[in-house]
Amino acid sequence: MNFVYYTPDYDAYSCLPSWAQKTLDQHRHDPRLPCYSLEQLDLATTEDPYWNAAMREMKYTGYMHNYMRMYWGKKILEWTESPEAAFQRILFLNNKYFLDGRDPNSYAGAAWIFGVHDRGWRERPIFGTVRYMAASGLRRKCDIDAYVRKVDQRVQPFLA
Image 1 (cartoon, helix red, strand yellow):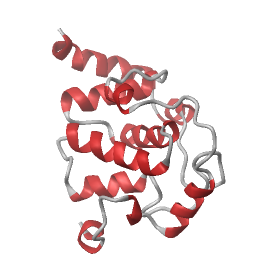
Image 2: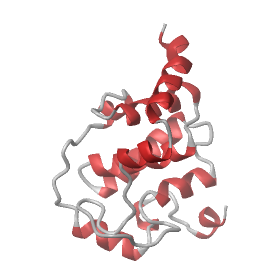
Image 3: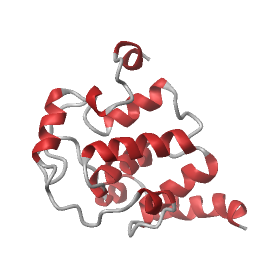
Image 4: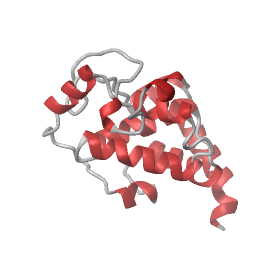
């Protein structure tokens, strides 16, 4: 609530802390392979089965497990041609599908993807020193394949 109340541009890339904007700018020309369109993301047709499951969970239920929500946003940053475009895509999809879209906590969570309320980490391509997340972390923290199966069972009635 405080982030949105005290940040007039909470829904714009300019709300990011200067360290995050600087490091993302330094890596703006790093290759992004793959690079997905908004339509591909919306349709959950990436090469990442975990991300696709998270997107389907959001799209058909309005909810996504919180850890998956962080991963979902980080991958959009990784797969989009610029950090500014990634920020807009995250907000667009977030506000279109999440039950809590357009909620102050949701805006703060989207900005967290880009470094708000966080600190710098080890430098990496694309992310600079903004926190990175990988599928290997998902496999360490949970039974990610069971999550994919659970999502598929939950969304099956919507697809029939």
